[in-house]
View (cartoon, rainbow, N blue to C red):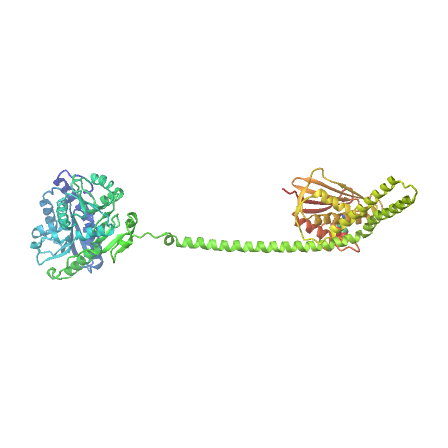
Length: 627
Ligand code: ADP
């Protein structure tokens, strides 16, 4: 439209512009009307806009009225619209050319009803109705009661008047922001706006002393924006109207309000619904539907044959207060300060309202996850218990296995004990004989006593080892030195090997082999492997009779190897030797290697069985080196 932020050089130029705009607007309407006429009795409605078709607040009233009229009208409608652009000029130009234009347009084809929206359009319609449409019913809609020329109203006129209660509007400012000391009032400089400046000044006299008023009507809008961005504390802005500023620049009210809202450092108040939602705080206000419903009911009544003079409406006042939640938040206005019956609009949903499904989903995922975690923890605990339980069983089984192993060793243990005991007896008898002599050789006796002590210690050591291996202990992990543990186990079977004429060799690793484990159980592992190796050799009649045990470090593991010179294992048996109850011996139980494997796995290690190329079996154990 040619009215947007331009400075028309003259009224004549503006009029040319207006005519071009109207011609463009009318062309499609005409075609539409012809189409409708074919369908029924066409009603022609002439809408007269104040200022412009897109000028708020009236544009919103007009939009609602037209939509409602189209909806309620039982007849097809031809709505033609004209705008009084000249009303926006500080010094309005002559209206005669526009009147002539309308006259020629509607000659012989007068509309069925004329509808003016806003005060300038009402004033124009009243002034020129005798010339333009003397017998056409006229509805003066959305016009403030102070601006109606009542003397000119006739039988063919209906007024839908509104009343702007400025006192109520300013009381509202003090109600919601009681600390307000000053209000800056924005009203433009067109003739209509000048009228309102005076009216507002007059009506606000009761506030003298309570509020200081600052008038912006003599400023350009640019200056208004500058001032509004640096207002002192406890100041509010009051948005009246801005069609033309003091510099003569015309504005679209809604755009101007948005610019103001973008820079203002104070809350903006207005009493017009068309500005509500664009940055005004709210309060009691004129509602569009209050005016449009009356206007449409009057129009439909008149088009249906009702007499305009019979239609009377009370002046429409402010509706119950409405507030913009976003502005309340922005200016820290508590909802408790709002008058009773207030309505709060544009409330932004809180996080819960906005993301309810997402939150529920996340919560559900968390719950499921928590359930899974607790299930897994429970399972882990159960496993740990089962593990402890199974270790206990291993310990018991291993203990029983040790008994049987020791049983096998009984003869050689007896032999090992007999040896020192026999020596002790012989030495004791010899000492007795020496002491019976006239001059006993004390040195010799001392030597014999030392031998007796050594033999006694040997016998005690055998018993100590036996007791330690037969001790019933729970599975107990501690830091051990693997070389020593293996040496201890070998000490237990050394005598057995000697008795069976088998050479038992131990080659300990040169480096320390610290591991975490149960020493008794690891000794038992070595013991079982050596006994098996000796059994294999024992069965063999001839050949080399040797069992070799060695320890070494292999990367991050400690390794124990038990090698023998026996016949080795059948290739088909290799996969089964660790299975419980697998045995090839007539008196065997088949539990020795199964226990060995269980013990090694409880120590996080591994064991493998193989045959050596040169013959004989090779058992390899790997245990992790302790950090
Ligand atoms: P058992 O000694 O009661 O038979 P084990 O579980 O200790 O039970 O041994 C299972 C089987 O593995 C033995 O019967 C034997 O056939 C085989 N085996 C174990 N060690 C050797 C070995 N060093 N040489 C040959 N065969 C062996």
